[in-house]
Length: 261
Figure 1 (cartoon, rainbow, N blue to C red):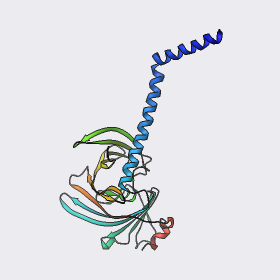
Figure 2 (cartoon, helix red, strand yellow):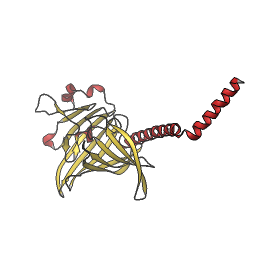
Figure 3 (cartoon, rainbow, N blue to C red):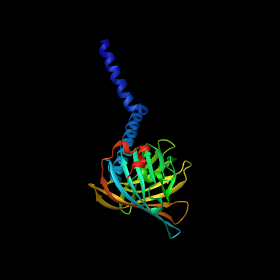
Figure 4 (cartoon, rainbow, N blue to C red):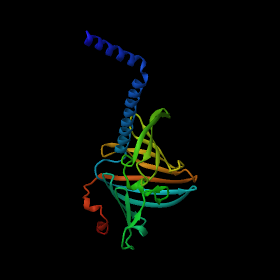
């Protein structure tokens, strides 16, 4: 009889916990919801990154043209070799006066080699490369390795639904400390991004355009970056001739920069 009474007492207590102990129940549900949101945000970001650039090692040409206050400005052409988002080489191919300069990225460390200087010079990801384009904009292939994503909300723009992700830098070495990224809900294509400083000031915006089938995926072939602080300051990045390429690890070393052909 004692065991029988204890059993029914336990059952009664459990029922009371479910009916009246809302704090426990809701905290578990919130924890599950938070986990789902975190996983969802990470999945969205990874998918958007896969659309921007392939996971495999690849080569791509990038032409950057800058407009300032409606007037044409600098024009540069680069060849980018990328392996796993942690190793990249950016070679300047135009203008001829700067041809031969090479930027090497390993992890989040950058160096530039110039034929006229005997030793590579250290750079930062956030340092401006040309126009509105920072070194990290062209040297690092995706956001996933640099940011913690959070799904903030969904928005409808021109009849299409978008996820809005808030990206927070994993540390101070990343290109931007905070990013807002709009990703199409149905296709996971990146639509636009806003880049912020540590203080939360909007620095620049970008739009992903001219999607085309490349290496089995619809990828943006044009990125338009606009200065949020200076009206009319715009840089256009046009990507072309993207192809997969085997890239040995020895290529991504400071000692090997002079050997690049």
